Length: 397
Image (cartoon, rainbow, N blue to C red; front, side, top):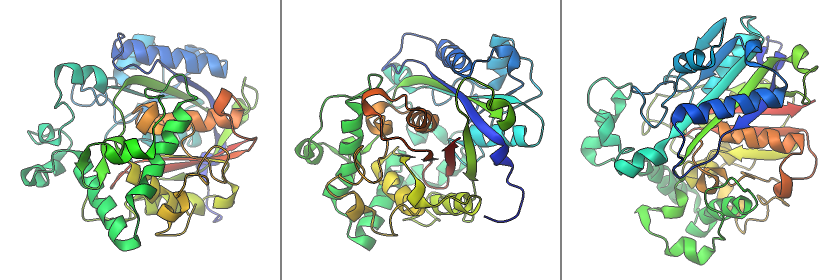
């Protein structure tokens, strides 16, 4: 760690909350959001009057689009919050950007308690429009996703086409196999069996995985995360204040948010993505090492992303993630590096980033029920694919 000021070390997670995970939910996006927020406040032992900052990513995306139907403006008005700072926006280092921005608001003295949230209602939207998430819907006009115009004319209609490119390259470069990649989906499903809030809890076998439909070679149906309706809220507090609240503070010991490559899904390191930049930055800001990690919650929007994050974070050597996960024992709840202990997004539901932080905290606080790991104090949460990447090193005091 350098001698530079590391502002996030003055910030702690003091409370977490999650709404139901519906497929679909009968609640509105705002109802889901309010439910998660009030649960997080109660968990921290705070009231809405204590909140002086609000953050999320990406905010109200395209006037209520199901990818992110609620932004800070609507939440502040609905809950009657009085804040010193609030912010959101797509152009940021991915799904954990709300936490990163909120932490910086506290570190700079703007706020004492920031409410970070993320709501998604893609399951409900797909009830009426099966193509709601197709990339060709994002190429018309100025919709903050201008780059898709360079992909969709060439039949890149889904993000899986881009993820498949990374998987093909990983297979080619390092000899990774389908059976090795399958262990991400199988491990997530085994963990989800013990998570009452998970979308998919039925056992999944290797035979079922290998016989599932190919979506974009080599990625199959079970390599894709599962749409849901859900909201998550996380309370960030100034560390000295958090020490007097209900839960032991979970401190942010390091943030990874760097991008040192083009913002592009294909003009980027195809086996490292932006994950290598974010991870290098995070470790540089901490005295902890990969060997200290007790639970790793790694982005599995598509299973290949989890393999790439394992390598980027130094949790296994470059090019060896396939061998590392082979057989599943190392990454199981009883293994040397338990991952995605709530089922991840492949089985738990596509909560798109903040779900990893919630599970990391539940494990650190010893509140994960049947899926609880042995006691530990350090966790990592990492989210994003392609040019989107951010990571958090979390330490329970």
